[in-house]
Length: 218
Image 1 (cartoon, rainbow, N blue to C red):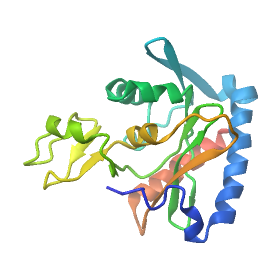
Image 2: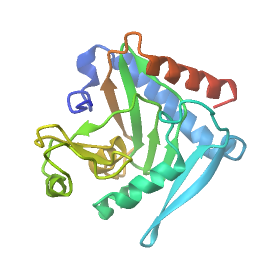
Image 3: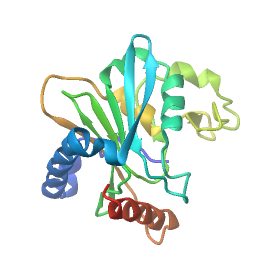
Image 4: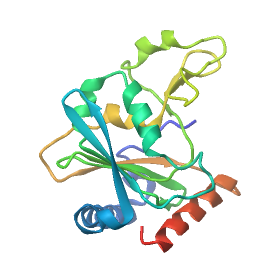
């Protein structure tokens, strides 16, 4: 489990600002291209409806046969959206793009981008993680869990407590939704985690998946 707070919007302290900004600009153009021209060839569209609003879930048509625990599926996104407790937050999202690429610089992994004006949330390949909640927003949901053993609220690990029942951890998509906000500007919110990958087998899988999709035009 990771705590993303010290990396969210603080990438300049890591000495990687220039590289990250360049990646940011390239990916912004890439998402525009994806949605405007290459969409039908490479991606499919599913939908999640909440009230009168609809969230498009844009995901690769091509399927990767291995490492299914790493790849996020449209079904998993719909499941997480359906259980998200603060439905008003979902109005900040029009599209969720599942981008099957692994973006990493110096052990800093890109988790997601949020295009404020267009209300597009782009999710990238990352190590499986849960985020520690640092505010009071989710505190009322601790009672749904079993403090004595940190039982998860569901098999999908949407929300869980640590072994002491003190700290609450939530799925990264929930963390992202609770932190983004639509604004009428062209800024992009960026979310990162720091990971000491070492000889991590998951790190190898992430690169294999990313390379597989890049070879097919993603």
